[in-house]
Length: 268
Image (tube, rainbow, N blue to C red; front, side, top):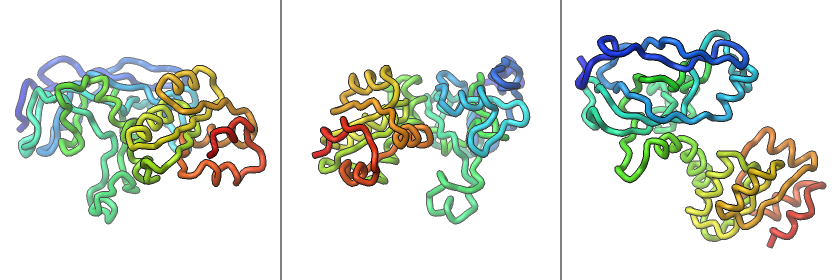
């Protein structure tokens, strides 16, 4: 038995944004699963639109993931807890939380080692056939809901997921005060990586893209250099890898026969 307000069956009908066909979204009922003892029911207050959502909308696929039947989109999200499962001790109704979108199996060696983010059986919001979070309410494991401090808005809470991508990348790359950084792509993940790398102490950050507007945003966010690229190698990299962090600009650039000459001025 859950603790909190009315169950969703007793209240309003739960609605969600369903991707039903190419370029077609419909607001339709979304039946929630039963609330388990370790779950919480969350009223969504902010959901980001990720590039993956756009890919699914435009092509019904992203890499090997194909939408074969209607799917609720959205995975960058935050909301307010309305009901908690009987065994949930760390959260209460009314808590404002950011949701981690990937649920590991909790049985494999990777999950047991704490590396559930690469669980081969992960169920990730809005990744076929798993439904997403662009709904009035969702049910989610309490352990994957993180209470937001009072000085953080729900909109900012929804951005915790993309921020975590950037922080993880900076940690893996050992970014620090001695590290120059090149970010390939000034999309949302690239831009938040710029901010994360700066917070990690990177002294010099250059970001490249093919789009003038994105580069202007990067410049306003404090990039030490912005470079518009159009040569084949850089275009292909940006297309397939929105961000690419490296320790040595010179080592990276020397690996290519052709690259924009303007990048040379940022290599010390």
